[in-house]
Image (cartoon, rainbow, N blue to C red; front, top):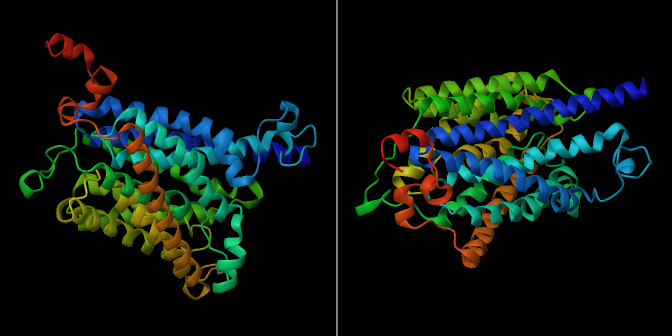
Length: 411
């Protein structure tokens, strides 16, 4: 029975890893549908290559920074057969790595949407390695492995409870969204976006592709949230219900506040899911619905302000979607997770506010530092002429529809 339990946990976590891995296809197609046609190939290649770089970097460096575990031991030790400390039976530690690696790789995937259409390819690859190798594992280890004593000495010592982030509203989404803001500010707007002091809107290339990306992310998110339990004994249907209710709330508020705009509707679902991650295991479903409703409206309003008033050219709106909705989710866990509001308790508002603000500030600082270093070393921004041609031809020498381009004499 013990062996059966170990095997079941391995399979359970493996399915979760596969679901979150599939979300990266969602990131890709969400970006493909939002950018102009001349940048679609670049969006697809970036997400896939970023995932590969993230995997290798996290394997050799990032996982060790976060958890103090290295995989440079024998295969027998990796599967737990040799009784080496740090590796569970039947390779459970390996699927845990796979699962957490898909979380780490989500950070550059988030950033990719913000810097789309004007970032050079190889500098972004270098930035990905720096984010996943050092930047992200520091916050991951601090929150999920209690590194640096922050949980015990700061949050619990000062506010009465550990900072609670069950599935990454802060560790993954807020961190990634605020890193993206730093990158976007360093990069500057796309050529022609704000010429002559005005705001010149750039329409998406494909609503169906955008919608496909949103659907893929929504489906995979139930692996992202529910399987963050990391074992069958810890899984809870409450997490699934809360994720569902927050998603619905995000859709409905984005529909109303966004005045039926399909881009807002499909991103509203993601806003709700981002916000519910932190407290999905402790909140009541009604509380989760409220969290999603607020997140959907927050995304719509802040996307419009950032783009039109503040002139922040964040192409997919990843700062309002992940950065601000993630920040809201971390704080909301300290409100709707309280027993007085129907939650399971074990959280405090003070810890959630402090942890959420610290995580977001760290993400913004990390983004500014990493992208400033990359820009100084090898340059970050595509030339205006390359932007005019599009990243597909300028970087990859091929368009999304090469046969049609040859037929029409465009290549």
